[in-house]
Image (cartoon, chains in turn cyan, brown):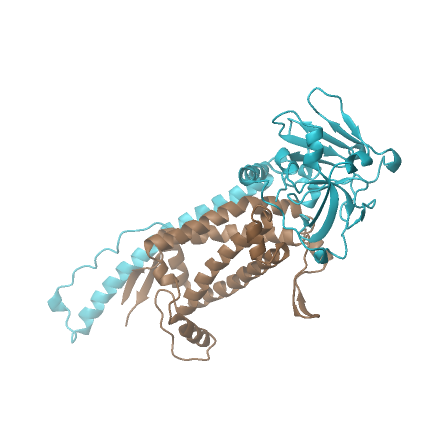
Length: 277
Length: 219
């Protein structure tokens, strides 16, 4: 597929020889001309199809290489780098002033779909549940009861919960702003990450600090006006419309401030660590 | 008597052939993603003509089910290449003046009907054929508009809070996904017709997309 100079000039045929009555001479001139064209087409085709062939083989080789590349977090490492590069772009553009759209109560989905149950099985005793906050500046971990969480200003929002699978539901959440809780139990300055875990670390998420500070990030204890059900993550879960559903951990037992990027349950299983909207 | 005419500039040939595998990867990874929630159908009211899904078993047998994470990681990688190639193509057509052959003009709409009737053997006289006929102008422009539509609806699904205005413009998150999906179906239909037309038109025309030149035969 290379550009070539113009077709070479047709060999000169003396003008006096092109006499319409002399059909033979004219036909001969045309035959010479056509032969030159044919030769040029063959030459261009050879080059064009050789380049096309090489490009096809190269593209196929690159694809094979990508598919077989060493896996990182259960995807080929170049794709993991891709997700991380996208994260950088998204973080650069992210603003806590941009809010997820809020809906009127009439828009709430009739069925608050329950999706993952990971982390909800083991070690849960509703009477003894506490939320542990770790990683504060030189302080021992804080241990909070549900009543402690409810003592923070109560926030309500009707937002869309978007699952990475492609479906979404409109949900009314009630809870405390994570930013309010973190203001009382502050992380060390410039802490970049927050890790959250369910009891026994059955489920775990890694979150960036800025998304945690988003005004629509709630430690929710009610869904659609009723206390969280067991499947929805009682007694306390994350409601976070700036992230996909898989980041909105149910039945939080531990919140930890950390400078080390925390592992993430689905991030370890091929999904984007960031998962941000 | 034969002549060799310039047809497709080198840049356009590269953009075209690079786009082909990129779009294929985008459609294929998109299918892996779509399959996690295959909800669309063709129908009206309660009447469904075609469900846009096959039996789960069939999909599992084809080893296409439960590959959402893989589909997403591919989609979010190749989206950049697809977008950059498309933007460069459009920029090239603008700066080179090629857009003059590609954009429909006020005659194109009537002529496109003539082209279609001719292709269906319902009309004898061939319609006016410049570098691209009217039907080609319309479809090659439409495919670019669809490309832009894919990028914008894709962004609306990808970052529905940071680009909430865009998501809102498309009628919400689910509507943006709906458009994103049907544009893709449009690509597939385009591909089928495009390949059929190329086969019908013949080798000389196809070869021009590789070597750039087309042989023209005069009487």
